[in-house]
Image (cartoon, rainbow, N blue to C red):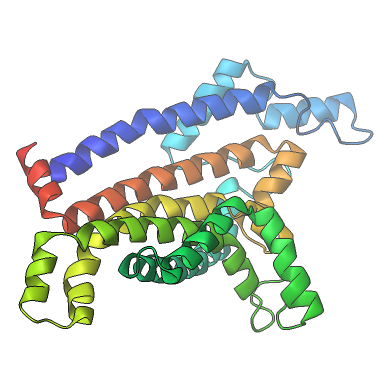
Length: 310
């Protein structure tokens, strides 16, 4: 198992390096610059600013210098927030984004897992068709459409929940969490249904039933552990995806998370902020994928044996 983890970590290095390289050159080669929108900037002032941020150096020198900063854990200074580093801005926005991602994942697991298990236990019945139809709708409806719809219905017409903010008014986290987690709930519902259908047809499930165990014990003690392995494997990438995909939801609900800095950085050509956020989220995605694989192997003896042989 440790060898597997070590190999996966080594495989992650070229992936992250490729993300850094592609993002760096795409951002630098895009039209415009961080100071192109400034008004009445004297040429000597602009030259001083470019020198301060190394923009006067050749592109490859900027790239190697950036890699050197990254090796020391530094994302560099922000171009649009004087006196603040990208590390500070990520540190300020990440807790809010992570909290939103956690609530969204909770919504996805509770709704999706419950719907998938119920559908699997009553296949080809209304208890199966209704949640699976809802899951299909959840996959098809994007968050930028679902969010305003929820705001319109529950925030404006019914006046049940706040339509924006984070942590200021009771209940202001419900609509963002549902908006962000609904799509993942749909995937989890389909994964848990497929996993449970496969497990519930296994011989050891029939043996448990033949011993006279109540159906709820068969499902909870014997069915869920094997049936939810695909869901566990999905949780790591899902949480990373929730962090990386929360930008639209944070913009809709005016949430002061990492997405706010990223969107503003894209409009302001804040090179270091764009790069820092992209590299940081890419690293999280790689690490959460590795974590989900390890958890899936821990729950599946056959996978553990395979890793042991390798």
